[in-house]
Length: 487
Image 1 (spheres, helix red, strand yellow):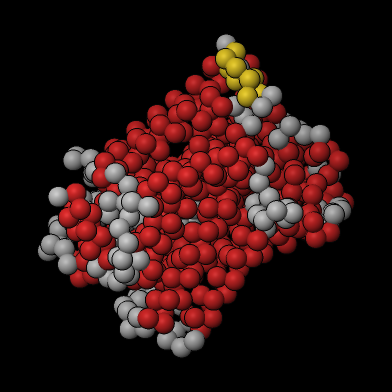
Image 2 (image 1 turned 60 degrees about the vertical axis):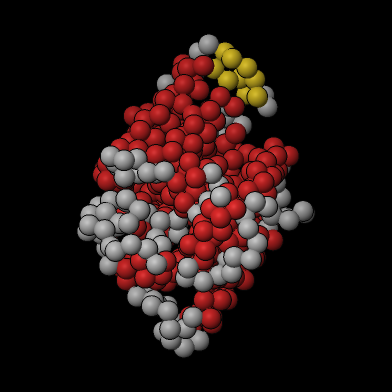
């Protein structure tokens, strides 16, 4: 979407790009968005299951393996975002390398993943707060999959959606400042966990180091797309960054490594404080473990507050990502142009933000069972998008070897291609885990959510004109063709 690549108008003022996005984010903002997106609520509610299924070292090994896979994918993203620092990330890479319909499929996939996690966070907020305030659930409404939904419980998540969406509409800088402060609190909680593990932890509690063999390893590994999704938010907001293109790639790798270190720290500190048997009976394993380490309910509640901080950082980042992707789809007329409208004052994709915000507002009214369904339904779409981006990376390396790549992985030789092919293989390996008979095969409700999202996508896909070949000006040709048909 640059003037050079797309034949647009002369460059806009330095604080805004040609689409109206304000360039207000720096390196720290980028890392905070990427890291914060990955550190959501999963580490709070899933750690006990990881330890029971894989053992301490089995879980650590699975998380390190997942972090390595995501680091390889992150390298691919790093080169592409530096070469094409435009809002919408995947949309631009696939449009240039594979054409309009593939661009839609990749964008639709990652958007679906983002939206499911945004909805997940809206449900996770009341689930978390209820740990601190057990009397939260008042005024029963209905029962969904055995969970009785209460009005007060659902409203906590719904009103949180209103606040988060409102902050994002007012500007990405406001959202980023809030993100940095919340992450600082989260890091303080992390230091508290490390201190508790050293003070009260024991290697004996960490046994068994491995449980259920390879089955446990893969049960943890299949959560990787859900746990690490978010580094790719950095490409979505790249047009809003006042940062040299070469540095964009480095921020992605840094955020992935920080997330991997966080997850490993959580597993090691939790397992060292309480035995697996005790953790199995815990309400929220991480919180109960830290409460036991300090013999304090206050510390347990502080840990839950850290979980709430993780929810807010992930929610904030992925709401940004989903809205920028929907804006890109609307801007290229793949979905209604309504999604491509910018707020005249704040320079944010306000309509897209309102759409995603509305989904997150409604989600809590379906109850806590939505947590598992949303995790399962969004993860396959995320991996599909990663696989397509890896494929287009290889195609562009072969087709446009002289393309300007400020952040070039593997040099100009075959090293970059090797990393790209490896990324494709690793992503296909993750996709295979969702096939029938494999550990991550989806449940009925998760398949329903996944299927409905892709059924809606099929409606838009068939309306995209055929014959829009890939290239630097593919988006302009697509928009021109859509406008010609309407005229």
